[in-house]
Length: 272
Image 1 (cartoon, rainbow, N blue to C red):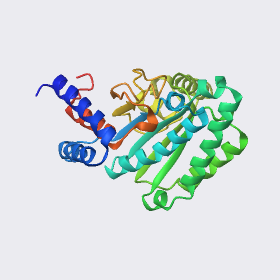
Image 2: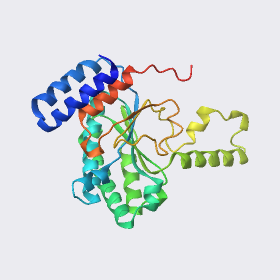
Image 3: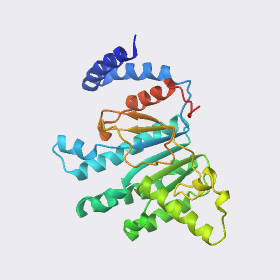
Image 4: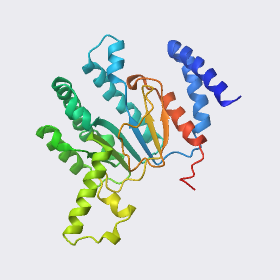
């Protein structure tokens, strides 16, 4: 069966499976697992969880409900990722534009959800049992002091973990990250701590908010939008992109596995 024809067939099957759930969904899930279970799996996945507000609007709910259900979905997806032993995942929680330009009420709601998420992560035994290091990166001067203090506690409590790395991009922008790295490099050159001839990709990477995390292998964005919206620009130079036409709260394990299957079907050449 050709790829376009298979996609049409799967779309029809998924619509039926979504309505009936149960047996048809489980059958399709098992079929997908047989296709992906032998890998290869990406080393680093980036998630742009888009569509929370539109999901809430379509259901007649307020945006608070949409963001809260989006947060609950993140917990599910992290389990799916770690079940596949994928060591690095980065979640685009809030962009710099979200922090600066959303309404005060919505920003406050998002910050409260982030407080809830970080508190839960810090008190979840699975984080310590699975040795998950938590990094929060971005322009944190734009978030409330209480949240900044919580970020510091979470990062300190997981700093020695080495098996998995969960990076949360909060008030983050890819261009801003690069500009700040350039500024820091210029300051160190001016101080005599760094020579211009020593600047290369490895050096530059160390000055990024994200430090030494590897490049993204796969970026998944929900809601049908097909752009990366200033997300980890340096790390996404050779990323595979997967755009999923469902709102984030409705993202299912089969949607995630289809993204993994798409990744496995691509020939990665890295410009060679």
